[in-house]
Image (cartoon, rainbow, N blue to C red; front, top):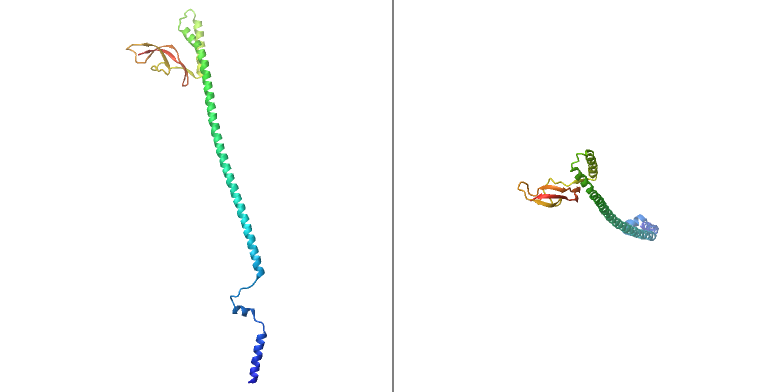
Length: 210
């Protein structure tokens, strides 16, 4: 009996002196955190660097966005200015072209107005009988034909007198009362009128029935 008690005592002393198994300790205290002061410091340092890097990245992104917005605004302003200049130039070109055409038309009208009396004289000479001078008459007819061709090339034509009297084309210097004639009918043409396109160079001088 005494021997058995001694054996048990020696066994207890042996277990007390033996170091504890880590796995046994972990199982006995599973919630105990693993201490690693050095690892925690490195993690905090990396996290701080990431925050700084992200701040720099967002700052650069904001700067790029601002520069892009500024460039877009400048581009829109330049585009608007270009469109305005283009429209102004187009209007200027059309205006100068119209003025040029007007000057050209006025120049032609002035020239025609100057030489029309010559044509009037040629036509008047044809109304006189020259039985003894047939060759002269033929020469006048040829000259008159050349003159009329020149007017056609300049787009100049006679004002029509087959239509009723129109103050926009005719100048009435005489009136006649005749029941056989229609109202505003042109009875006689004293001086032929001429026009170029829709512009009157000279009004027809006529006699009109009332």
